[in-house]
Length: 180
Image (cartoon, rainbow, N blue to C red; front, side, top):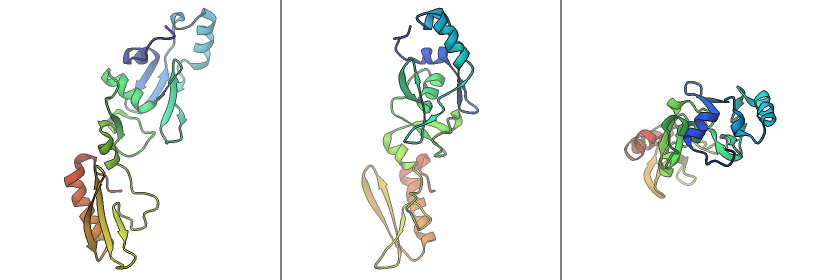
């Protein structure tokens, strides 16, 4: 079975997913998963019942491998629960890339996933989509939808510009809009 395609059924056979915590653990594997019974015994002694997908990759997501094929924990969790690999992206609702609880995951398009990005670390206004105009010293609010920037105007205060962004985000991004 070593070269089998990684299907949701295979994932369910090899991993136990706890939807409440978002953690995954390796199941005991039978000898049919290995070339020799000794290899099965060694693998089970080392990995069975241990947590899987504990490596945090460069992008901040939990990663691991199943039968030699690399995968991210949130996509594996989705496949285990729904019985199908996601068509698009999987969005972490709260923005926590390692929080793989089922209640924190949802299928999204690439655009929707971008809507849910947090405020950049370089932002100094305290509000997503708001920057201080160098010349005018007023706060400029802007929002991007599908690659197009929409100017929401200049405002006397960061709070006012933040409110303009929040209103536009609710209208244009819907449930995927994130303000912080």
